Amino acid sequence: MKKVFCFGLMALTSAAFAAADTLPRDRLNLSASASVEVTRDVLGIAFSTTKEGSDAAVVQAQLRQALDTALAEARKIAKPGQVEVQTGNFSLYPRHSPKGGINGWIGSAELLVEGKDTAAIAQLTGRITSMSIARVGYSLSKEQREKAEADVVVQAIALYKARAADYAKQFGFNGYSIGEVTVNSSEPGHMPMAAPTMRFKAMSASADESLPVEAGKATVSVIVNGSVVMTAR
Image (cartoon, rainbow, N blue to C red; front, side, top):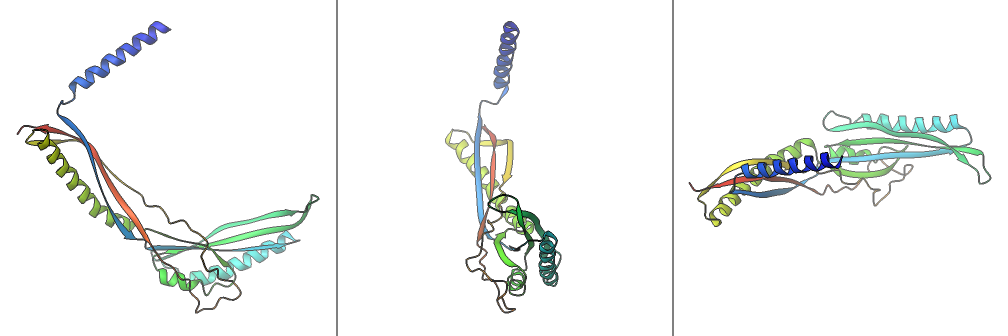
């Protein structure tokens, strides 16, 4: 077994050196990146409610009623591409007494509203009275991200080419030719949905009471990695 292993290793090493000898000796590896800050344009709000009682069926019915009421209000502003509405977590589990055994039931329900019509979504918070605000967060829409990427990739490639020309000149060459190149873009994620600074109590909210929100910025980056062959032309 050892002889076979050693032979395989020697063969692999020889092949690696042979492959290395075929690579251009005037190859230069380099990278360049560019980024831009853009305003997050999608607002997401999670509404939730918690109910508890001794009867599981009653608790479940209360949760369903609260969710149906909130859902009916949210559907009034729902619009494809602008405001998306969907139900979130819906759970019901037993409540245990300190001495063991079940002495009741606890349940929770969640409604998620997300979209680019941030004004309508913020105003919705004052009209939903059966649930309270659990989390708020901003993200970047696909359209906004792709538009930013289209601008940034041009900058990153231009910088890559400028560096290639500059480095080739410093090494005593007159030019270069592009070798293998990869272009990668970052994916800005959602701004964490956190509990709002000012909690809106479900029973005291009014139709004129909208949630104060601030979008913030997201960074879109593009990185160009690759190699060039420096030439004497």
